[in-house]
Length: 295
Image 1 (cartoon, rainbow, N blue to C red):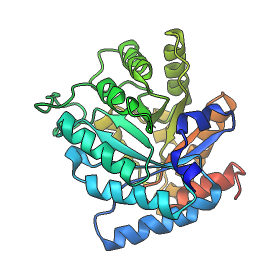
Image 2 (spheres, one colour):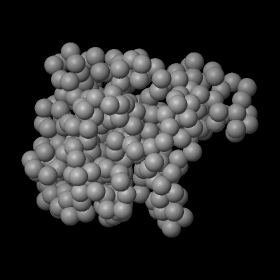
Image 3 (cartoon, rainbow, N blue to C red):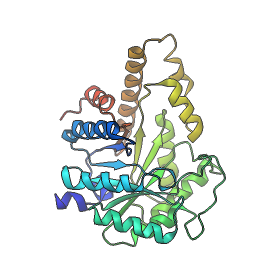
Image 4 (cartoon, rainbow, N blue to C red):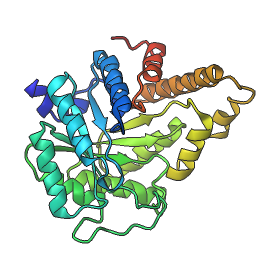
């Protein structure tokens, strides 16, 4: 178990086999915690490269994130990665959180700037005594010999980015600061992912970039979220839901679309797939079945 807990996710991805990974978020109550651990147990047999646990805005879930990732490290065969953001923390507080992660047996961290209180399109104001850029947080994590660091990437550009080229330059800065791999936010057009990879490669950086997959199970919710984070739902995708009214029909179409996206990404050379599970396992397992990925 110790070997799994201390391995570098970036190194595992670079070993050459396709990476499959799952993302969870800290539950708010006992029922949510039961749902989370049911999903973890359902997905553990697929032997993912890693699983990640998100970090609430302004550090609101810090203790829960530390607890969950530590428990995953100690009680399962999975390699956990904990998220960490600059928002609301001084440098000293961030160092303390990293101490807590290491103490819990967590050796991989996803370093994020995080969003302002008004969301990703809001004006960014650094915390006094804190950090301004995700690259600074990457440096903070990477300086610790026992920790490995990943970062976020944005196929359609971060909402605050001046341009797609500038957004790629930011990812390159994070890679040069010590990031070993990147995970994208959700997107629905494979061309957006491959264009991001090409922009980064043209700048001389070969950091592995894992595409983030979010199946559309609720079209209205996904559209709203996409507008918030700068992820457009293509018209051809929206059109495929025309005339579908039953939840089962909508869900089946969402699974089909996600499966086709996954196939296109893998066939095009993506190093793997990262699934946003929303703490449920069924949709991911359905996509795996359609891709003929078995336990």
